Length: 91
Image (cartoon, rainbow, N blue to C red; front, side, top):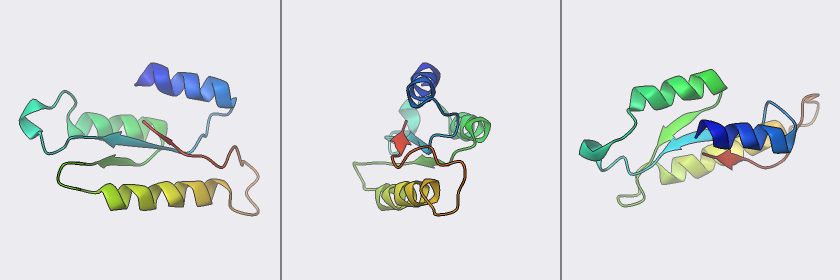
């Protein structure tokens, strides 16, 4: 995921692109490849929110979309000098 984020930053030409790091398929706990702690640590490093979801049991899906809207609104809020875009990237 790190090369994908780097490419997004290069294309947008701005370090602070609104992003949410999302771990999917949280319902498959025994088959994880990335721990929740690893995801949270990476999100902290990138200064973005971290969420885990499950489309199968609809876990946190609504909350994810609400957070996307918050990120987009924050990035385009009037009076912000560091606006970079009006889109959000989900990794």
